[in-house]
Image (cartoon, rainbow, N blue to C red):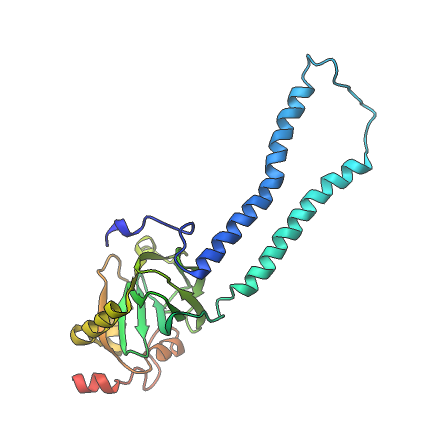
Length: 279
């Protein structure tokens, strides 16, 4: 995978969630600078005023308390805490990962499985899947259901926002939206073993027509993702090329969740009608 697609990060948002998170970061920085900058300035002023050569500086060894100074010293950090706490409270509700996002086109449902050390993306409504490459139409919201095939992991697309964990036997929910066509980096944000550093994927946002063409091409040329093929994918692998699957067995994601990342549940991964027709 070319490193040329990894130039930007959280300060270059490409969706409403990432844009809101950047605003929170900048607001919090400005609020904290209201304390940091005066402290730095006052440190220099005090050192300059109370230098040994300044005869106008008064030394008051008996002085120990000033009510006005105490109010000033404690009110400033108290205001900082109030402002930061207010921002955190409001934004945590406004940017709830489970909160749906409106889009210019119908939402795309994506089931995500973190493997060792790859990412599996299943499109349940389309019956296709991809590995290490998530393709979506620009302007559409993305409804993620995430789980893990093994250890706890962390899903993050910096330019779209909202890091969230994946856990075996559990499903977490995340809503994102990518506003403009482009290629955006995604990665694992939590150490999960020897191949963790290469556990990256690409989010490709396409115009609606190009997206439909991609779906048709995957359906026409992709292999079938069934229980046997999933077990092969679940084996520890690092540095493998992205791939796609034109047909996915019905209920595969639910079987992965029920089996804590494995397919041990009776009847799991039953072939879909399209897969049976292909065979």
